[in-house]
Amino acid sequence: MAFFCDEFPIIEKSEIASGIFSYVIHCPSVASAAKAGQFVHIRAEGYTLRRPISICEINREKGTIRIVFEVRGNGTDKLSQLETGEKMDMIAPLGNGFTIKEIPSDKTVIVVGGGIGVPPMLETAAEYTDNKVKAVLGFRNKDRVILDEDFKRVGAETAVCTDDGSYGEKGLVTFPLIEELEKGKTAMIYACGPIPMLKAVINTAKVYNIPCEVSLEQRMACGVGACVGCACNIRKGGRDFVLRVCKDGPVFKAEEVVL
Image (cartoon, rainbow, N blue to C red; front, side, top):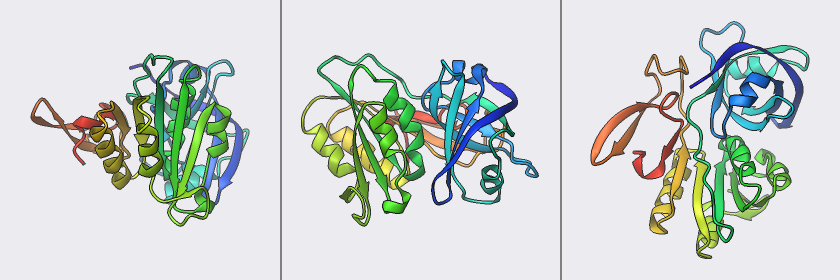
């Protein structure tokens, strides 16, 4: 796995919801190597450990990547203070991304994102420009909704769910997911989000016998597999393994994940 460690210039910054920031970074070397579902590891000035942030979009022609993250602590707050024209200290791209497959013309793929697990699903959806893509996005309320227009921009038919019904459909992401699966045209499901959502998506995929990959969110230290601080439980061939989210993931086959 090739990755780069350098300081890269920030060319765009915006706050797309309260405490949620979007950055576009000019990094041709990273953009040329990056894949949907991978992440970057960013140094926050004054902090020893870097912060892992998923890659939201990749533009290889312009040599840029986009990241979207929520301020959840002092480290991400420090990152959010970086401005256009400044440089971002990154190790990237890291981890194993989603498996992008050739899909028959009469089939579709579904990307499911919950909360801050939505950003990595955008590039995943964009990888299927020649096929119909359904995006199912879940948020707490209208104020937390992000990127729904971006999914439409990349050609995804988009359904938004909120817990309180203040935007889109009220309820869980499994409702529109099941509606789509009932059509019998789904070839693949990809998902990232909170554990309860992932459990529901994995169980639904199993019921309908649809291949599914999920991206796990986990606290990380080194980001390159050395410290084993982001261990997760995986079951393969009837045997249990402890793998590293940063190195062996963050994407895993749904049927192998033990949540």
